[in-house]
Amino acid sequence: GSQHFAGLVPPDQEDDEKERMVREVQEAAESAARRVEEEKMAREAAAAIKKAQEKALEEEKAELAKLVKLFKKGDKVRLNASGCDQPADHDWSSDAIRPGDIGEVLSCRIVGRVAEVFLKGPNRRTDTYNARDLER
Image (tube, rainbow, N blue to C red; front, side, top):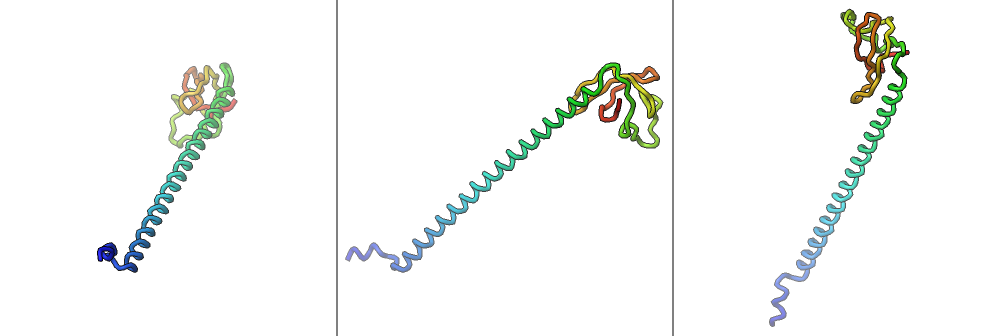
């Protein structure tokens, strides 16, 4: 009688349905595990990038500090190859120093990401130069 009502679905169909549900749960768990792993890898990659950027910034600051120490008040300096590397039509007439000129360092400091040298040229003009463009 009444016990027969419990199994409205034939037993083999019931087993198929259970297997399908188990597969769905397993697939959902695997998918969730993949997402967790992908998120973990993304966090690790972001942390590695941040660490590399911080290291590069520290190295840049150290290099700037070295450059600033190279140029002291009173030092005689001139443009190096990169400082002379200007377009052919560059007008040097208003520059504090021109290729071959010797200038005198008045001060040197770090401004942002540049080691800045303030100097006076032989023409008595003053200007600021990137330390990378000068040599003693």
